[in-house]
Length: 417
Length: 150
Image (cartoon, rainbow over all chains, first blue to last red; front, side):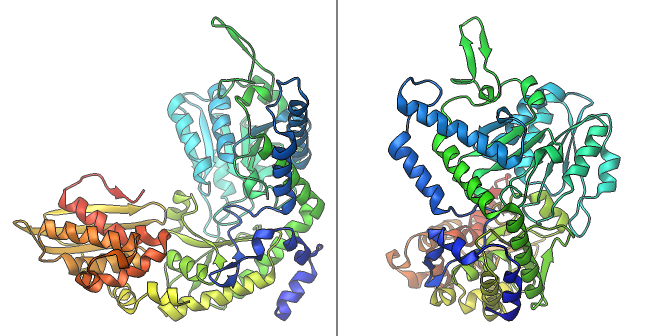
């Protein structure tokens, strides 16, 4: 490890080497080299505790929830509801009923766009999103606007990748019904001032959905402090399994919302003449949910909390600063996004090679990064690039991983220089 | 790292650096747009026919080294060929980059295109190599909708 690298990691409040031992996938070799996993904004790896919890659930507790009188059903129900409680604590929500289990952030946004959208959108009403949103926080709103004849408006970003807060203020009006914004940009790493956004949106009576897909698990999240009506995240980006995520909705708001999908569990009584719906959150959880996923997610969130979200944020920020500094070694490499508040995501382009070629050359050295448009095509258009290469950090990454990336990029010049 | 030199052969790097027939064909009979939404590659292929024969072919666009070199080498390979010959060549090319080059009865017949044989080791890059060909076929068939690798 280089001297600078040592200096950086001394600031970390936990033992990264010990953390890495909890992630068995990291110890493998890829193309004959030790795996360097830097694609955490796409999905994170899972600690043994999560893998074991899922195995244990299916080995000893598996049953359907909320309906059986038998022991296994009770255990499964307890595990599922305990997981809801864990998510509630993780997001610092006020009430377990404010947590709806969904497949992930995408499904959560679709749920809100459909259900809450049907309450508040219509002609002369507007949804305000931003230029840096992931497609998941664009397309559901486009669809909702089409259904309701509402108008979709877009807050521009500045050249360094921050939201243009002046433009945001100018676009807000009494017509604004919903503001939907990323907590952290998946392509740029910009951390948006969500509390300020919520405060301004509330001044005009708009509700706010915060897409926390890149924030949950990387920083302390307190939905009551943020003050938003909705907060969404995906479990698999926070050390949990795929196919499970959560929607936080403030209780008084969720309570007013109609169901999104119909089926079992979301009803109270059904007759062919009239069906009455269940209370929240069951009203929004039609059908058998991903019980094992919820159980695994709870273990993942507990793992993150035990390491400490503030410590994780500081660690990843240290890696970001170190990587930003080291990547300056390459004069033709340009980092996209230089907002003062950035998370552990670093997007770049090189004159020498296309991001796709960079990705392949790194992969052959065992280094996994993401290349492409990162499901943010409007943002790529704004930045004037077809694609970028992106390295993104998690709790288990080290300065040596950054060193491997920087050294690995030398091969790009060997091939294309 | 031998896979790296297998993939990025000198001829591919050369055609990436200085792509041939990289221009707009002003008097094209037909053109088509191809798009790889996963990586943002976009290409336009122009053709000018002489009866059943491709008299001239050119392309424009942006993409990775594999997609650009593939488009460039394709234009050289199909110029002067009949439509049926071009389609046959694409079938063999696609076979070569998706299966194994050894399974091709006669790789020699591929000429310079054999440089792309290494792509079959990189499933994620097959679409980069075949985008120009899909677009060429669309231009031949005068398809109005842009073709997509997805």
